[in-house]
Image: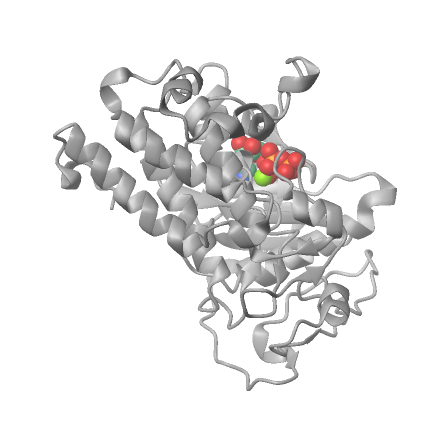
Length: 375
Ligand SMILES: Nc1ncnc2c1ncn2[C@@H]1O[C@H](COP(=O)(O)OP(=O)(O)OP(=O)(O)O)[C@@H](O)[C@H]1O
Ligand SMILES: [Mg+2]
């Protein structure tokens, strides 16, 4: 027997906070019967109020796996296959019966968090299986076998960006590589924010350096869509929402008013730009109270070239960057983390600026652009 999901999405152009907030992304009115297997229903099954249903390309995201297949793929979740652990549970490397190498995220939550976890699981499957972009991680499928929940993703060989910036044992990324990663992530967010993905913009809500995954050749792909939400279209629109996300990346306007906008992602993107520039963490509890938050620590000097030099990641090779490109990058970051969300650039603007920054750096260093394969 299948669990029944009724989905109602308001596509009205006016902000309709109550309705959209209630819809919590795309899943509402579902009853959680965790003992019943959940089966993803493609977009054709959804009731869209104001718009004709647009035929959507179906992706691999709806492959359904059994618990046995998940166990087989990971050698019963052996320590050798352990990749990392996040708020949802552990992540393992696995090999499917088809031979495909994947990353398998296992839901492991205390009882009181199970309902939230179930919601995140369904939003992740619903949203990711409808998206297709080289800078978004692909969902290969899922397992909803009894109470067990697994998400199966394409395997990203180089892990997450944060580990490359301040992880132990990872060689430091040079400046052109950091610019390439910033551009890739910007393109992924710009795609989400445009309505080209599903006909309505999507706000990610948990953009951060551990959710930027890197392929073997350092292509950046955004992951973790469990907190994502559909947004009404238009510049000034917002939805009111419970403040969820990660410390260090919270848009101050969102935390003080509960109004979530696409610009909340732009703020978080600005924080990741600052991590790329300084090699520091968004929040570092090892620092003194006044220096724990990266934005507060560096915001005031981002447009001051002399002081800016002091915050550049000391591990960046001097021969890999021009001060001109650093100054442009810092200026972009400073605008992304502005307190007023309306003063931040859009993600589409960030993409254009990063392309210009890459060009400026390559030109200054006499590097051929095609050799870097970056724009
Ligand atoms: N598709 C993947 N390929 C390779 N490694 C992955 C993949 N997905 C996740 N990982 C690894 O597993 C780790 C845990 O990921 P997860 O998304 O569960 O947590 P997180 O993003 O670090 O934190 P949080 O859950 O608090 O947001 C990641 O940091 C990453 O290194
Ligand atoms: Mg993650």
